[in-house]
Image 1: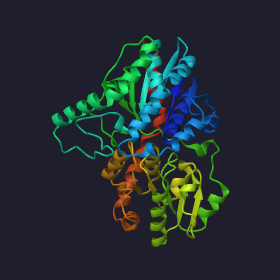
Image 2: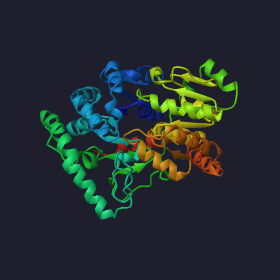
Image 3: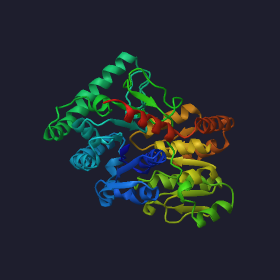
Image 4: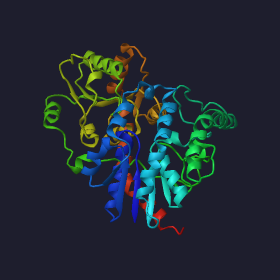
Length: 418
């Protein structure tokens, strides 16, 4: 079979699809991956055929826009960018899709792939990396700028979610989406986020049931799998010698990262570095954007633009991060405590789920530095947390590679009679 895999987003969104693609290739299938050329070296290094969508400059320019990380407006800004590039995404995906023996695999925002599925009739799977993309009234997600509404009765939540989608989301997403659809002979749609964006063939929730239990109001075609972790170190991405030397020179440091796509985290880094220095903890700062770091780093502090988390995180004392699903899953697998400081998008919901599991504490980006110090001290000293950390890490290890289970699900989809 041939699989066309579309992965849109940051490194935390792309890396799991590299793992899934490698699992498919190991079974003899051909995989062609669509992503920003910003990730081309990583994808090609994994041995996967690559097709670019947009330019590296497009991606880098998007990361420089602070609107992307606004708690309430970030989602709208992201959908605006998605709709602008939707015709190109359709064209690129359609060009790779053969009329027979092709299965389409798309991330949550791979709407071009959904259009190709409808236009061509090819089988397709939507792979959601975060539970926030599966709205539920029985167990609602924690939304940025809104918070946790689980105290409301189910009927009220259902009415609230339906009204918000109909009168807010559909009013500014559906007209533009439907113009693109009409140009390709497709009928208009509504309920874009709760219905249309999910493939009717197969929806994969790429997390274990104990992280986000299946809900009765999820799409009926939803299957969960576990976290598809990308072990880049197995492909030659070993730690840089200077980083190895730093790790070996003292106690395990605290890792600090606002995510690979965040270029506006100066306050985040300033408070995290201050908290580590005041507690006498070594710190490792991980970001490709050096300009958001303090000018003068304390002794025992190092900066790296990038490091493969599967190799790095087991050697850290803790991780202070934004709550991206990929980072969260890697930290759980490594069995280290997490301090989550969410900015936007799915990060608030991921943080709430981590806290319920007992593996993380959460903090607001606006919290004063005194609270950062107290939170980090509590994170490192909390008695009893080791049991929760070990439990999660052992469960993930016992479940085996989720990428292989997702490959099973995708193969089964490809074998279904059409």
